[in-house]
Amino acid sequence: MSPLPSVPRPFLSRRLALGAALLLAANLGLAQTPSAPDPAQAAFIARFTPEVQARLLALPPPMLARMVRTMSGGRPPGPEDQRFTLRQVMVQMLADYQAIGAALAMDNGPLAARNARRLVDHPAPVGYLFPYIGPERITAANFQALPAFLDGVFGEAERLAKDGEKGNLVQASQRYGDILKSCIACHAVFRGTPGVSPYLRPAPEAPKAP
Image (cartoon, rainbow, N blue to C red; front, top):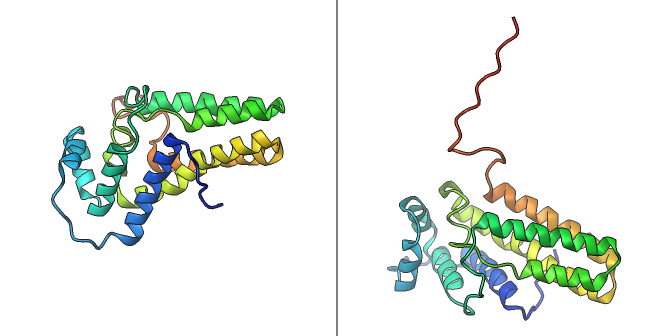
C-alpha cells in the first residue's frame, strides 16, 4: 500500500490521524504507565453503556487516550456530525461509492473525483464506531488494524479523486476495486453476521419428511 499522502481535507485528515494515532499507540506506547483519566476522557467514556465503558477501559491506556484526543478534538464538528447512526452513515457511503462507479463507467473523471471526495467527507456517526460494533469487538488487536482500513477506504478515495481529475481512469478504476476490498476487510473485523440479530427468536425447524 502506498504511503499516506498529505491531504489538506479536514475530515479525511481526522480519520487518518485516528488511524495513525492508534498504530503509534500499539507499536510504541503500550508500555507506558497508566494515568488517571482526564476530564475529556471521562466525559467521552460516560456517553456509553457500562458494557462498552468496560471494554474501552480495558484498552491499553495510551491507545484509549489517543482515541479520545483524536475523536474529541480537532476541527469543530461539521453540520452533519454526530446526528446519524453508523448504519445511516454507511448507507450514504454506499450511495457515494456506487456514484463513483457510475461516473467511471461514463468516462467522467471530474464527476468521479467529486463523488470520491463526497465519500471522504461523510459525517461521523453518533458515538463513532463504539455503540454499533458490539463490546466484544472493542479490542486492542481490532483497533490496531483500523489504520490500514481507513487508508484503504478514505486514502484510496482521495487518490482516486486525483486520478479522476487527471483523466487516469484506468488507475482510478483499480483504486475503486481496492476501496471495496478494504470495506469488506473492515466489515469482517467490526461487523456482525448479516441477517443475525440477538433480538430475533430462532427460526422454527422445518418439519422432517416422513
